[in-house]
Image (tube, rainbow, N blue to C red; front, side, top):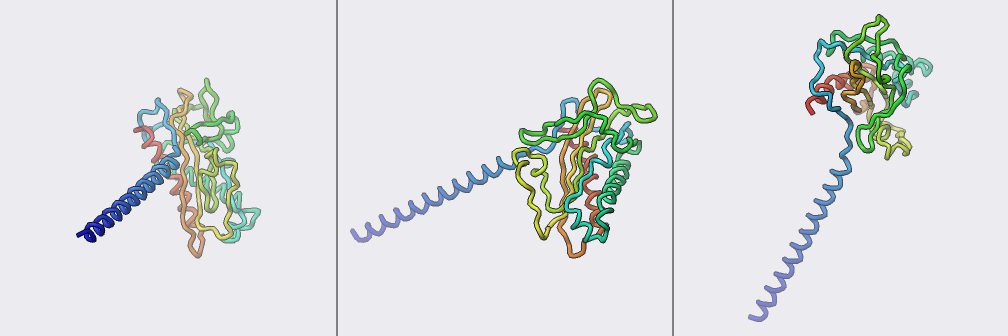
Length: 252
């Protein structure tokens, strides 16, 4: 009987130890999940109080930010894959992104008008805060005066393109999270993805205030044959997000 009680006691102690270990394991997993969730709460957009309803498709909208806002990273890699000479690769993609932005936005805003290239260079350069660590830097219209098109008309809304970056294995955190900005961007010898990163703002030209700003990115895994069509599709997909996030931003 004593032998039975001793075994029973040992079994109880063993079970308690197992439950105790299991409890600490679950607690550790929960803590790890909580910390991971907190670490990935960067806010990549900002909607201002005056933006309470999405702009209509027939609204008076104009595009500012063409040409000089484009950046190509790993130009030699793209030049080799697409058989485009190095001296032509940058202007080629700059013009391509420019035309795709206009074509894509015209589908959402049929009345879209386009300002001349580099028109935004007339604006002061400022920083827009999206989150504690996330900032957009770009040229914003000066306060107190509406921006006029070359024909003297004054659109109600302005779409400001701050940056459009094409490269490989890019992460928007490396460009816009100032707690990580000092770190060198790792360029893998064999890239895995083609990346597009966009930053932009919807601006109320009548009130001279920002309505909505955002940073978006698109990635596509690299296949054996990198084609110009696949890059065009990726650029189009990234640009098409602009009207989508404007519509969502008004409902926040």
